[in-house]
Image 1 (cartoon, rainbow, N blue to C red):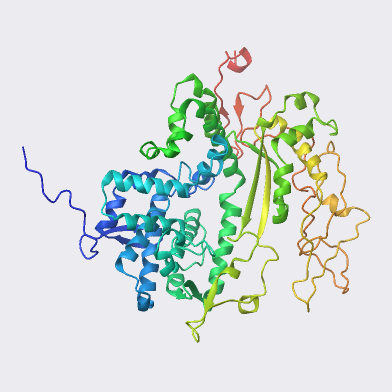
Image 2: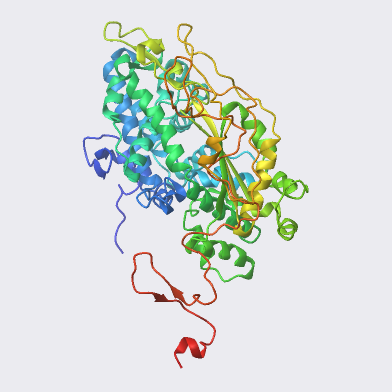
Length: 583
């Protein structure tokens, strides 16, 4: 029997000069980590992140978006170290030590340890439904997993450092003594002041790369631009447009990618499958059990799918619909002002839509379908999209310095950056889904009935400048030409509604002359509570998926391709007739 190496249990050195490991990263090229940092990477708690996709279900729509939390956390740890080292070298008087740098790097590395399957699908939708009334965030789970990782592997880190790392992950400078002396360190990984942190730097660059977007974001430029002034991280005024573009890119990713209609449909289907499986599998109970939670990954869907228990039959059926692209369908959508969010959430619910359908006030509906419709057939998605600080301009929370005055900082005026700023930095995107295409038109009609009875409460138009009032005009249209641009099916009663409030910036499409005598046709903005003119269908309309269109009885056995290829015979379970066999 061989003798045990006496050095086997010795913790690795924190010296980066020896045995540094390098990782080839798609965004940052080669990133390196010390043996001490690698001792945290080489744990099942961190390796678990290889099996949790960064963007959850998004890869079902954007196949390239299959990157994981693992590479994102490596990137954030790398950027966190770059930022801390840059601030240390730029400001020697701040007394930033190597220990501080290592803790900031470790916080960036471990900030997402607590993410559940499919990332935000788990903590944003599933847990609130599975454990109503329970306050649980993935940030809390990250601290739980970090504590368990340190204890399980007896890692070389002091209790004081553990406390500091968890405070850095939370961005809460009140949780440790260093927060008073160096509050700027708590803005590197999780910046609660303005949202500009290395976590955002990495995920925006990484997600854009994954979906094929070509952004102009220069991470090295932003890191090198950072300075500490008045104990806050500030940026060179020359980089104000770069920071604004970063904030806009966040909004754009949420609008186009993260909240894609099909992505959300599949998210709701996975949530329904998990809720069906929850009574049998008790999945939600694992959030407080780190030794069990460490095995909870995106593979959960496969476990349900390969199961044979009768209790999971309904969950398996939903997953089968995902596999065959028989998805929930969007019946209507609308963009509302940020101020209307609470009203929309309170009034537009699956229950209220069913109640409206059964009110007897809808014309042209199928009463048999009305009787069958339940709230379980409806899903309502209400997403808030913003630039990073709700309805506020995020640049109002960023302080800048100049080359002439590098030790003084201030919030920039619009005239210092650009006058081409949005009138609003947030909006609410409402989408109504049906889980059964039979109810497509009925659900839309019921939703629109609710919409027509909502009181107007949004913002009115204000002049952007005292010297330049914004011209707003509503075209006089006695022949209703605008309505003729888009005509819904004849079965749908259409009653144009009067504007219940002043339009916001922009104008209704104008085919006439403006007040100045010049013809104009600008992008139109209608009141929030008007119907979406591009989605109208008849109340008895039954949605059909383009890829799952029902076939007639005569042609049910043959599938015709769009490109004129040879027809493909479908699989049939019934015995072929004489006509079909050519007898």
